Image 1 (tube, rainbow, N blue to C red):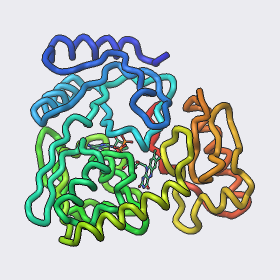
Image 2 (tube, rainbow, N blue to C red; image 1 turned 90 degrees about the vertical axis):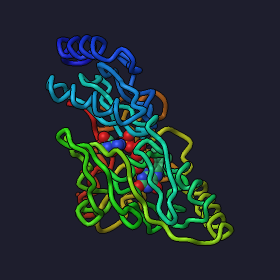
Image 3 (cartoon, rainbow, N blue to C red; image 1 turned 60 degrees about the vertical axis):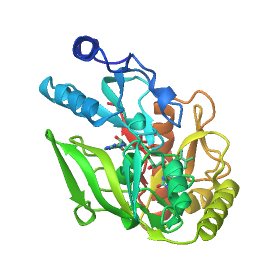
Length: 306
Ligand SMILES: Cc1cc2nc3c(=O)[nH]c(=O)nc-3n(C[C@H](O)[C@H](O)[C@H](O)COP(=O)(O)OP(=O)(O)OC[C@H]3O[C@@H](n4cnc5c(N)ncnc54)[C@H](O)[C@@H]3O)c2cc1C
């Protein structure tokens, strides 16, 4: 049960009154919108398919002091099973994309695998690493998503954002990209609208070859067979998966949350895991790794909830 029924009522009634042409689902189950399959109800989930709707809803939330959350593909999220009182803006339908020479402008909701394919079709290299990352471009910039030694920071030219009722472009150098982090990672007041990427011309065959190789490496090492949010932790010194495996924590379980048997950096939902199961497991792993290795694990997964 969510905590604030009064706020839920205000949110649903003001949205219904003001935005009857927008697709809004009251009391949407967020488990259906996260790759973990975990998450209770939100007050309302608004499907954003263009900039006009996005700015209208954001302005409304600001004027009425309504809490809001930005949802990409939910692939790096753990949402509380108690649910959240707030408006969730689902960005996945704001997903157009344009190629200009070596540049691609992608709206925030474009999926990374789709974008990597579009780049490949026009012989542009630089996005092969993203072929199998199940996020949107907006989520990927917020998290500086990456794999196999590349990440978003190496291809982002600038990011177009909504902030304080204004739309501005932020150049790469002002985004403070770091390992799986950027200025947008936990920013409450910035919404990524679109991203300009600079790629480089290459041969289609070379790009396809690289995409296929990376796909097969991932299939062998990361195809864990259960729902997850990818790597649960990051650490600046030793890879968390290595320490977790060497400490014999594979398969360790709290409720229905478990350390994957296949990739020890992943926490998986074995069926009916709750957000508390995952959080208890993360706390246990963190404390064992601190004790045995002296290393501090930081959660890579973003938590939505009290
Ligand atoms: C099987 C699996 C494999 C994965 N492999 C990788 C990997 O190899 N490398 C890697 O880096 N990650 C990986 N991930 C994690 C995840 O896919 C990435 O972090 C991805 O970039 C998250 O994008 P998303 O759209 O799903 O974001 P979400 O999970 O929806 O959101 C993540 C954060 O970004 C914010 N956000 C989303 N969109 C916007 C926006 N438009 N404006 C502002 N903030 C926004 C959200 O509010 C939230 O704080 C994996 C996940 C899974 C499930």
